[in-house]
Image (tube, rainbow, N blue to C red):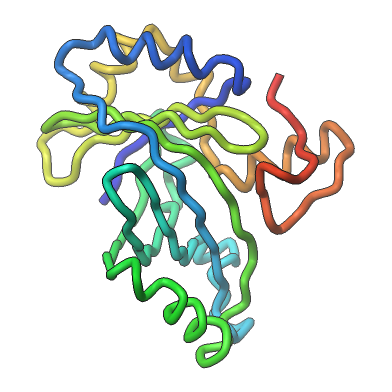
Length: 209
């Protein structure tokens, strides 16, 4: 099970939020990484991951940094009561594979399993963590997300998240319950911009202001 909460800001707030996180002495910074993620749906509409009943995301992600690259397959699903809670509670399953197999994996997904590619997005992720928490700054083409996630298998995850909410002087009512793609779609509608299924830095994007 995953317990997390996220907040959105303009991209111009990156340095400000970075400094705030660096001031928390028990957090270790893991550096800034580039990620490209593709999300797929089941080839049969009957088993679609995007129905209200399932509300899940099947993802393939490649991460690159100065230390090397890695690839991960993941399944993430919002639980039905998450919108009624201050902190998101989600189901998450992850599998790591050799990044050298990324192209072959994408071939199998697209041409053998015939899964439908729903969207692809880029971001830069800066990670802070310790034994109880992981906090990330995600730079999307449309804005900045700050996400606080309790480490798995710890006691009182909601208490741990609340600790860092307090340290960062954040308010629960300012958090955003839904995922990045919901935020992107909302911004496109508000700013009357074309919605792309590839959310990339070289495309015209709405902006969080």
